[in-house]
Image (cartoon, rainbow, N blue to C red; front, side, top):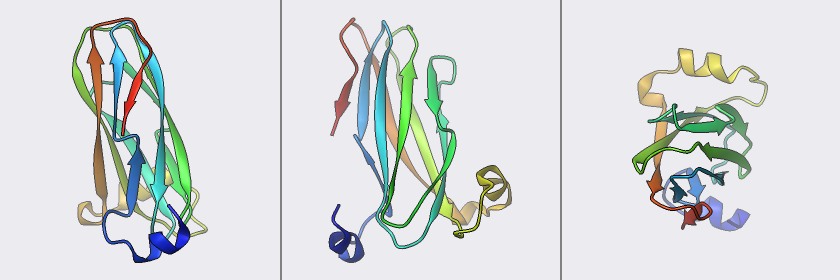
Length: 131
């Protein structure tokens, strides 16, 4: 997103691209770009509905105003199943360094989230991103 568009566009502060990913049952890898379209620094936390079959890094991080952060997702070999990655975020000051502490202290009403479908499909091809 261009900086001028970020300042005037209404909608979510955090945008995730791609919006979903399909993984073969043989396993696969995908990357997601988390974009902060707002003017404040954010802290994020990533959760998954299936920690047995997915490895996600990083679990926590910071995104500067109008900045971005990559998230890597690895799906281990497993059966076809629909899962989801949940990215939560809240505001953070520029001098904050402990992301875990922020989420322990944050009120539930201050935390926003976005769900990203992670879809396990029968097959051996590479992971596919869905925009």
